[in-house]
Length: 145
Image (cartoon, rainbow, N blue to C red; front, side, top):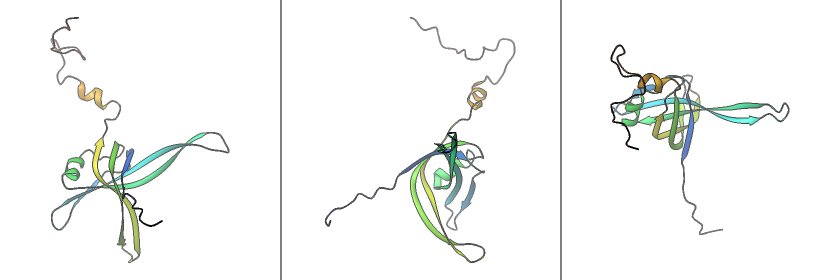
């Protein structure tokens, strides 16, 4: 068919865990680039054994500029993250001179989620002792209903 124009859509949303601490680089022009490798799991049922297993996919996510600098301290091994962006392919030459190609996600948003126990620890009062408010209480007045 001629005359049909397809929309050019390249959008990806991934949820997974950082597999190793992210690496921050700066280009020769001074632009920040952060590479965040993540693992994304998909639960699949093994047809032979009937057991549920994780099918894990590994992909590098790349953040640039302000997003890279804001994310560098949060992108630690094991951190849960949601990445929104687009898929990009690029070619490069490895150390042995071989031409390689890679697919990666260029992030336009990265949201690092709190791991279990982090919220409770960060919500704990800074000081404890006599006269300290019990955990979970606040200085708000009682609700009038």
